[in-house]
Image 1 (cartoon, rainbow, N blue to C red):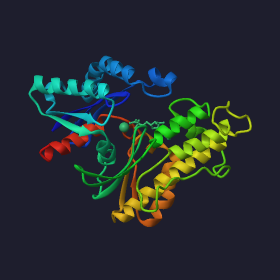
Image 2: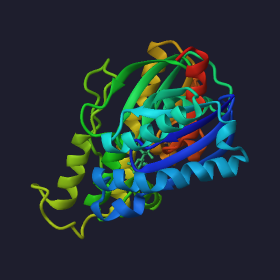
Image 3: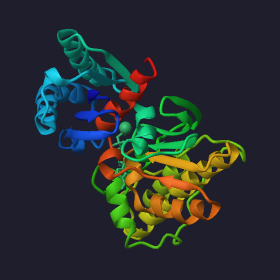
Image 4: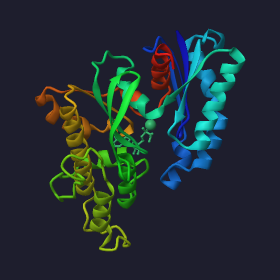
Length: 321
Ligand code: KG4
Ligand code: ZN
């Protein structure tokens, strides 16, 4: 069964052709990052308009690279939520139009479930598993009983992890997107130079909060009111390393706690922040000795993509969705 996947929930226009939920024949992503860079974040109106320009060329390119034609496609899978409403509508309109014209099913896919599923796209996964989604918009822990079964165990009560990286990069005058810039700077820094706070929200909580650590960085770098210029006494690499360590510390702790609480031995990590090497190293250091199997998809499936949408869409169709 051949699925065309479409993803337009945020600032990436993506299309992919996937066979039987597993074999990725093409995976095309048009990033809008350059259009949003000067604003240091995604501007919804710019995103929607860029999607309308990119959607048809991206779908065409995905078909071309797959070596298949639109008439070979058996179903369309599309991200239906969560996301920016104007952005989502562009992908949904394209998917529904193709579905109507070709008279084939259109299956809607939850973007966050797809991030958890992305580890299972090309690899066999053992279920149940605990899924961690760490991106610019979300930081969520899920219990997943199968490819199509997801229960949210915890989520951020304020900033998402990626959002905190982006905002701290702005405080440190580092380029957007902040995650890769902070990771790079942190390589030269001492992760023990400053102790930034870790917010656990109570011993049993699986929710996250990153606004405290972000404010602590702001006051440390730009004075007690956070309104000064970046202090020349501040070591940017040290702050980057200590902030990164503080965020990753809590994420890894809570995800492992969720796996132990639910008595599962597999953890699947997805979302843009899953590219972070400090996160990967800390999982390896803390989870593997406990017998936990931690899976990360390849980088192209960590960030927003349509292959994960088509893959999960296949399983949803098989399950009667
Ligand atoms: O999943 P994604 O591509 O888009 C959504 O938000 O859905 O994630 C983007 C986020 C941005 O906040 C970016 O700063 C962060 O992922 N990110 C990283 C890294 N690469 C991207 N954060 C930490 N370390 C990285 N290497
Ligand atoms: Zn995403």
